[in-house]
Image (cartoon, rainbow, N blue to C red):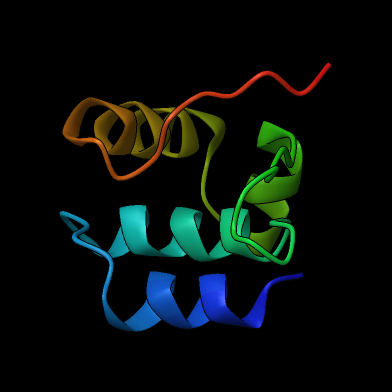
Length: 75
């Protein structure tokens, strides 16, 4: 877990709403020390945020569209 990524997600990230914020914090909890390599599954994000699958996917799509997050190659 990257404490810096969690703090950024909670305090400074340009998210659109509470659901995006919750999903971003769930991602940050899985990030490496440099804030990258966060690959939790949708079910993990659902469990951490208490959100439905559709809400998680919608939040992730929105944050990707606005550039808050981006897909990476985790293989």
